[in-house]
Amino acid sequence: MKKFALPAVLLLTPLLASCGASPAADDAATAGPPPGLGGEVHWSYDGAEGPAEWGHLSTDFEACSTGNAQSPIDLPAHADQKAAEQPTITSSPTVGESVDTGHTVQLVPESGASAVEWDGTEFTLAQTHFHVPSEHTVEGEATAAEFHLVHTAADGHTLVIGVLAEEGAENAAWQPFVEGAATPGTTDLPLDVAAMLPEDPTYEAYEGSLTTPPCTEGVQWVVYTTPVELSADQIAVLDKASHGHNARPTLPQAGRTPYEGTLALGE
Image 1 (spheres, helix red, strand yellow):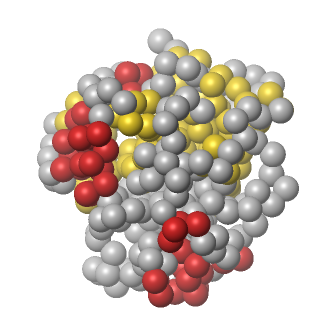
Image 2 (image 1 turned 120 degrees about the vertical axis):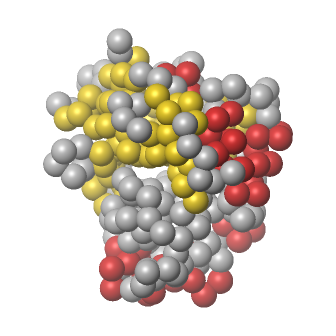
C-alpha cells in the first residue's frame, strides 16, 4: 500500500479535540452553510483557528480540548482484539447532491443509500465527505485521502465508516463523488455504496468523536484497513477541493483499544 507522510503542519499534535453533530460540522449528519455565515464560528486547519485552538474558539467547541475520546487516532496494522459479532451493511444504488461546506464537499443522498446494523441499532447514511490526507493513520502512516460515510440512528447516535484511499488505478465507483467535489451543487450524482467499499471487509472499530468542531464524542468508528485506489487525477481533484488539506491530526488513544472485525454485505 502506497503511503504518504503527513505534512509538517499535521504532525503537530493538538490538545485533545474533535467534532460533533451540529449542522456546522463536516462530519455531522447534515450539511450546513460555509463557516462564517449565519453567525457560525469560523475555524480552520491552520494557524490561530486551527485544530490546537478549536476548543478555545467557542464554548460549544470545548470538547475539542477537554474530551478524552477524540478522533482520529493511529490504528495498528492488525488489532489484537476481535469483534464478537459480525455487523452487516446493506445498500441500494441512488443519487445525491454535492454540497460545499467550506471545509470539504459532501455527497448527500436522496434516500436509502446504505444502512448498517450495529449492535442491535440501525444506522442510515446521511452524507459522505472526504479529508486529504487521511485523518486516521495506520502504524503512523497516512494515506492520500479518507472518505467518511456518516450514518445516523433514530436515537441520535452516529456511526462513521472510514474508507482510506491510496494512489493507483482510477476508481469508477468513486468518480461521481469526485465530479461532485469538482463542481459543488451538482445533483443526481450516482451513489452506490456497495461498489465504493473495499473488497476486503476487514475493519478496525473504536469509540471516538467526529473530527471537526464541536467535536462531540460517543461516535462509533468503523475504519476499513484495506484502502481503495484512486487515480492521481482523482486525488488531485480532492486535494484542490480541500484547499490544501483538511485533516485533523491524530489524537491520543486515551486507553481505548481498537478491535478488528468484518462487515458483511447484506442483500
